[in-house]
Image (cartoon, rainbow over all chains, first blue to last red):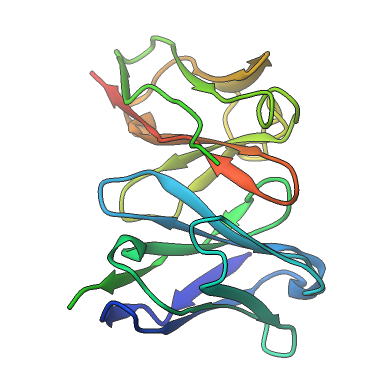
Length: 116
Length: 110
């Protein structure tokens, strides 16, 4: 069955960087688009970024554009989110999710806390 | 991109039906039929419940149904059960490979 496992979260100071990973299994990773979605404490879900199945195109929410970079490695079946210039408002649980028009499978999330 | 508008909370007794609305704009819900719904129990992975406005993935009970009229999509849960208590989120494609979620609705089964 589909399994998505996020890792890489932690505590980072404002202005710092962090790279999240999402290990995928149970499906042909190179055939599916992938998303990152986040949930700040006490808030709703927020779409963050999407990468096409072949990595050819990447798309971002305005709130993270220019600071976050989504990427994928088909040899490792892994999705990444490089987060730079982190702000307090980036504090959230970050989920990776599979597919294109709808997010059919989700990981359990990894917590990122931006605090001094 | 502003979040889609959902009621903060809804409630119903076991066996009853509830409907959760999701209001967007002509740039998202009103234009695209890529509206999906997710059930989220805190601390767990969100679960995919409805896609393309009204289609149910395999394994989702037919008590869950979706619809859309204009800029507003709706999720109806009939025959409420205790395990339906969760947060529910709508999501719409918003063009140019961007997506927008609703603010979430907390469903309480009384």
